[in-house]
Length: 403
Image 1 (tube, rainbow, N blue to C red):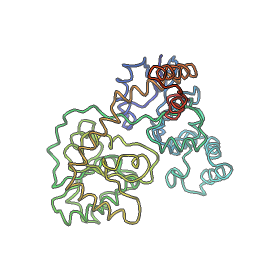
Image 2 (tube, helix red, strand yellow):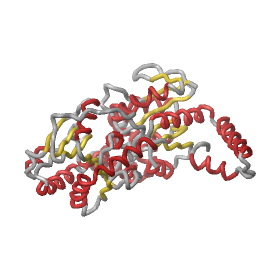
Image 3 (cartoon, helix red, strand yellow):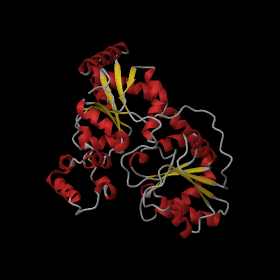
Image 4 (cartoon, rainbow, N blue to C red):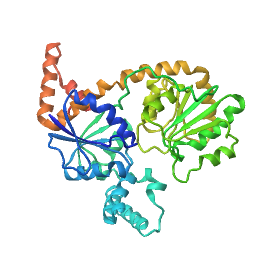
């Protein structure tokens, strides 16, 4: 089997580029992979695999290829409004944007789209993207769908996707000793990594940290990542009197990020509203065995309660976050050990690569593969003395092994 692999790759700063850098070597041990390149002829292959995220600069060319040749889609985020707007309005194709809005929301969606095109409404991908996912454009071209969470899988089904669907966890980086950075410090040191904007709940993190620091004056907050447009972190720090307690670093290379994370006592990765994304930063934190705070939404809610501390997004969010930070400082070792055990069990790279290879074989072979798998299940049932294998066949369908 030969797989055409479509994904951003370094030097792209996309998190999906990091994901593919991790996955590709393991996948190549199992199947023949040829990596597609933007602007070049599509490679010959038995099946095409398209990694789709919400950034039109990183993924626009991948959707272009998908529209020409349907294949297996890895849906890294459910909300794709920014992507679709970029490859339609951004290219002077307003009608394509209206079609996408109507596909997901009917005539009302088309009218809303007209309001955007006529500058009568604000840009929906900036103000309310979670209400208008526009993922239907991609789902309609998917001959198979790989998701990382039940959250995204359920929404894809609700949007009308009826094809093969596999839930494959985000792979974890193989365990290796990481030397903690020595140029950052705090007692404790709280770390927050990733793109810094309102959706990452940075205002709430700063408020909770300011409260924590009144009780623990030695505490420091490390904010690492590029800042969103019109999001003035420095001004917020001054208003809360945190200029001495917070250290800001812009985008850092992979090796540097690992060392900074390893230096932290507690890590925070909040998200609301969720776009249905998984988080590479969360997987890294779990692999390092760090106590971690997440928002109780989307994929993050699916993480076990004994592995992460979940913060509800409600009127008590800041107060809960404040107390959760202190609790994590005092009891972090218990959560850290559980986190490492969990990620090694559920997110191990070989296990993920095996699941990808199996899904791609089914997608390439279709019904013939399904028949072969069901036949082998029936044979195994007979070998162990199970007379009625129908419930095993139903379980195989429910798990996504066959359709």
